[in-house]
Length: 285
Image (tube, rainbow, N blue to C red; front, side, top):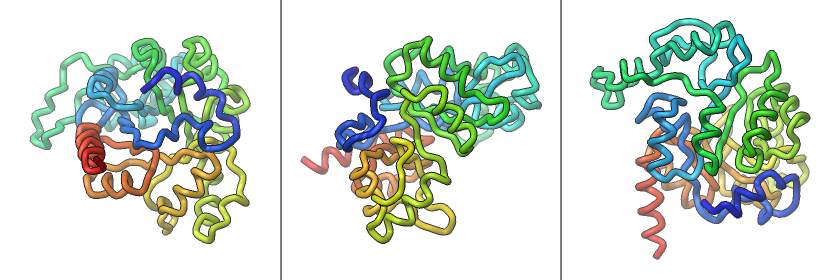
C-alpha cells in the first residue's frame, strides 16, 4: 500500500473511477474483524496478526461505552465473544476491558480455546488508530443512539486518519450523522442507498441512481437478489465507486470474485485469501 494512495482517500467526493484510491486494479485483502476465524474478533491481537500477514485493510466495528469511549466490537453486548455479559453502552470502559475477549474462540474447532486467559481485551478506536498510523481502515458504525458521528469524526481528525478510513453503517441515521460531521471522509453506501443501484445495474441503467458514497460494501446476495455481478461491478466502476464484498471465507467464491474484478474482499480468513490472491496473480503471468 502506498502512502500516495492514502493521501487522496479523503478527497474522493466525486469524479471518475481513477480518483477513488480504493480502485487500484487489484483485489484488496480486507481482514474482517481482524480475521475472526483465526484470532479473537476485533482485538489488537487480531489486528497485529493481520497486519503482519500483509493485508491491505483492517475492518472493524464500533460502539461507545457508558463513559463515551469508542470501542471495537461487532456485537452490542459482550455475551457471545467474551466471558462477560452485558451491553457495551451500559458499561464503562474499565468494565468492558475487564472481559476476556479471547474466551470463546477455538480456531481449530477442538474446544481448546488457546486465547483464554491471555490478556486479550476489547480494543479501543484510539489504540487501533495509534498503533497502525498508515493502515487503511474500514470502520462500521454499529451504535445509532446516541449518535457517534461527532466524537468519531473528532477521533479521526485528531489522529490524522481521515484520509485512510472508509466508514460504513447499516443505519441511514448513523451514516447521515457521520457524513454531516465528517464530509471529508470516504463512506460506503447504506443498504437503502445501494438498492436502486443494484436493481438498475441489472438493466444497464445504474447511471440514473445517485451515489452518495464512494464505496459499495455489499454481500453476494440480498433481498432475494444476486448483488455482485459483472454488470454491477462495471456499473460501479463507471461511477467511480469501489466494490468490496463481504464476508467471503471459501476459496471458490474468492477466486470467482477476483476474476470478476471486485476491488476488495472482506474475509474472516485473510491467510486463505492471501494465498488465493498470490495464486491468481501467478496464473496471470
